[in-house]
Length: 381
Image (tube, rainbow, N blue to C red; front, top):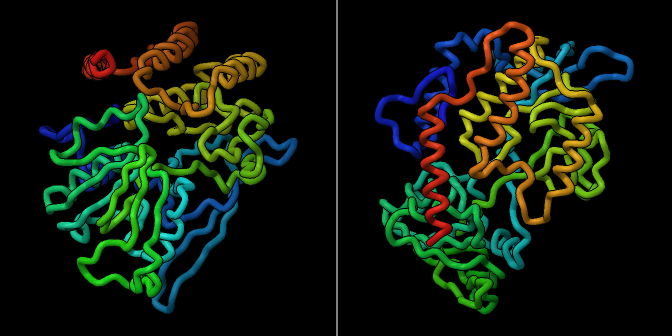
């Protein structure tokens, strides 16, 4: 999992903390002179393309500190194409578990989403209930366990639950939480004040009927909601995913980004592209590849299929989708996706007498094949 622009530092582990990732991104930006092409401290207020216009209008607000306070500079830009690469780790998804909101209200400092997690120090020698089985849950467990934390991981068993073997020794993996119950008889529960070292006054009931008590802290590591507020009416949060029309991007599920070709190009107007929509992928590698594809299309070196073909492909994909699946998941199937896209892209490049897009290197392919084999072995056992 790396960008084609830079290898990871020698000796990097498979899972690295945020400081290493942060430095990796800074190094890429520095080496490839990205800084002078970026406007910092700027929020995109809106992205729109008026009917009949050949360009996108992007409105921004830039914040700057001054000796007397601060300024907010608003600007309007015109672009031939727009790439949305804002990620989907901004708005936390919190499951609607009975009693969770009450625990959060009564004991706000003891119940957080993983987005709020910054350092393991406050969790030293605590009993922590982590809800979720993704990378965030793994990272938090690996950081807090060495500080004496007793970790209970609540998750729903599925084919995506594959990180258990990487958890620290002693983590207790249990069923999904069914309900949080507050001990209303305890005076401290009413005052919302807990003494240092005092556990949350209540109990947790799991879906298998088991009851947990003595929980000091709860970390909800259940992912994020996808949102592009700057795209205005293309986002329809009150519409069920089944009812999305041919222009809608986001619906009430907060996960699917509709009407994209190959998870990149907005079918009604492919001059709007997205990088980073695909889920459960080798992040830097796959998004780097998608960016290369978008660049080839925007440069006019590769042609998109007719709109009718892209619509039909998307329709068939949605017809195969079942609730409970992850629409943008490429879990253990990135290689198939990459081969499909390369076949299309390189056919056009060959016709134009241009060098083919290489795709992933041999090291990535070998590592990915090993991952698939390990995954198959875990299912077989």
